[in-house]
View 1 (tube, one colour):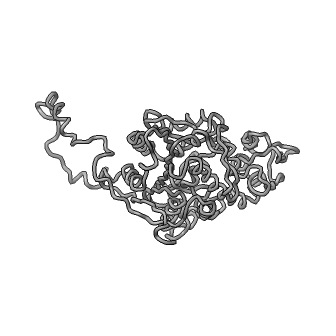
View 2 (cartoon, helix red, strand yellow):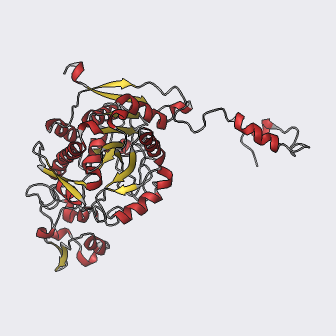
View 3 (cartoon, helix red, strand yellow):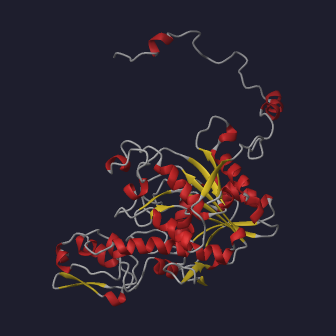
Length: 446
């Protein structure tokens, strides 16, 4: 491909030794370089889409990044809101399956109106059924998709993504952030192959004899994980009402037992990866290609996603911040830089033999079945959403104090206060004149 046709991906690394090298400021530098200002017109209602973290997850994007984007949108004349959609009951104790649960979770994680400067709106409503249907004739596997109404109706969308691994999607970048995150509940069932004849959790066989029945300590949890009551114990064995199964995956992750883990899940996961990219196209189409912008933070790179209620050690060192108006290119750039990064000792990278540079980190450490990292990218190219051909453009650092709270040296405003109240006692502080510093420099023998 000629250089002219390559997408621009703007980048700055994660190193910092000055306040203008904060990752918050660097995020704004790559966003400005990539054309964030161009997607927002005065009066636009602007969604800021991100994953606000599962209950007790600790690797999700910190609210300070979001606040800076909120302030930027306001400066451009936009009306910002922070958004995500509800999730499926993919584990028995998922904390974001209703708008109420998600609001309680995100506020505990620091995403409050006061902190963000903008409201949090759960885009698909109370139960996740407030959505807009989008035709997808271009889709590789999905020919329609359902997008959360608040996202479908916004004027512009900033997609802020924590780039990391994922057990089902292999990696979670911008494609997954909107492909899964902007889909309503039925949109999520659609992309997870719910009731598909050939792919997904509701299409496979199961092994009832592997179930321990009443002897299983997780039986109650397993049965109660299914929202359609498709699981039943008969003759002390599992009986699965397949016609009731909507394919939410809750029964698989409820106990991780061989009754369902013996299913042929690989084809379903690969089909889901393709569907994630088709689903992302639905959001790009409904918002508009010239009204959507992507920022990836390749930091705190955990092997699994922010959907789980824990965060494992990161698998590679922090890399930096990326921005582009091409969703496929920005994810491909992150994949490539992650691949060329060394793995971290005492992490999943070491456990999976992925310490060397050049190893596919997320196929090795993220996917539960080592599903290829290429499927989301290839599907995004085939459905016309973007290109995997890109050029890295190193953004210029912000040279001034535009993203700093204090705009003049702090000594000036403190002068008046010190004239009113001097801080050092008239007789000085009570301290020793001299101590044995040499004694303190070495391990002390008791």
